[in-house]
Image 1 (tube, rainbow, N blue to C red):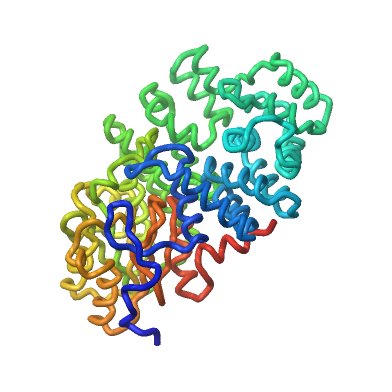
Image 2 (image 1 turned 30 degrees about the vertical axis):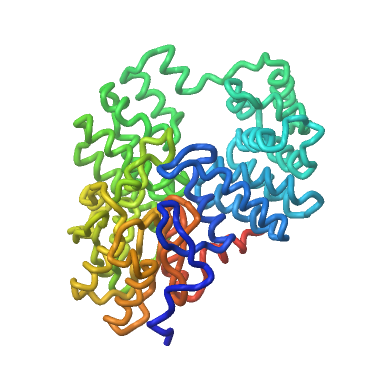
Length: 485
């Protein structure tokens, strides 16, 4: 049996951004956590950590761990549903690890996810290292070229990125892809010449014909709207008087939801927009609830008893980035409701300056999300442990959802909140698992040691690693290291 009374101090003790005691993440965990919780180049509550991501990726590459950086980029794009941070990592790997065999296939994989991924990757590289084509690493150019050679005329036209500094025509000029057919060749030539017309998409259709029921019904009947477009336009569709039935059927299709790679909070955001407009009928709410349930279907059920602690402090209220309407507290609430949904028995609380037990049922994810408050206040994680110890709840695991910027608690003068975990383990008499899900990627953690699982991300994928870790199948870092390149 693992010891219950492990030390709370050691060489990894550091200070978080708030100036309070925490543990430094190891470099691999820190890179994963930052990549899965960052929009590259955008501010968070405690500032933009872009430079930290770049420095850490460069450090790992220079220490001979470039493959891991490439694997992190691929995992972030294909599993974690993150784009810009993965583009930055691929540019850094290509620059720092010339002549290595893993760069080109990693670039190819990331650049093949969407038609503009390769262009964005080159744009980030240019911002970091300069824009001259002659300076672009061969593996980066060839990997992007591999992806472009799989594209057809429609994708070339759709993803021209003409409003951006680095455009598709720039990408074509430096990569020289071999088109797969004459139609694609003509599209590429026209794109480079600046004469390629943009395809007539649903946005153009709406602009020309108006936001009317007939237009929306036609677009939906012809399946011209992907699930993301449907989510973002549910209010417009309903307000126009169009038939929302096709959208609801899409949301109730678990296979479509899982294949869409939508971050779970996107469904909650759509519902919140409709609720504020007075349009969240029972049918709409049930369909969005079904989509959220489908999103976490790949996570194993959590047997036994689970304690869930949700950070609702002031730093969690700011958006995920300066441009986002979604806050860290929204992501925390969604993941907490999902964790409750897959648990046999759960005790849930939120904490800021104080802590409060929440009456989540686990029956409806959407209904439970609405019960998680966004109160503001200090980040007093100790209050949550106090409340748990007083509750008499004998947990098999604790899940903590937080930005880890603990700055007020009973343990301010006693070290990190690790002491709270130790005290609870001693109280219940067994080595309770602690799964700490980092939602901001500032580079520090509050727990360490045996039966501690540190993760980072906004995707339902983090819930998968709870049962995997407890089953001895590894951590998020070990999962990333299995990515084939």
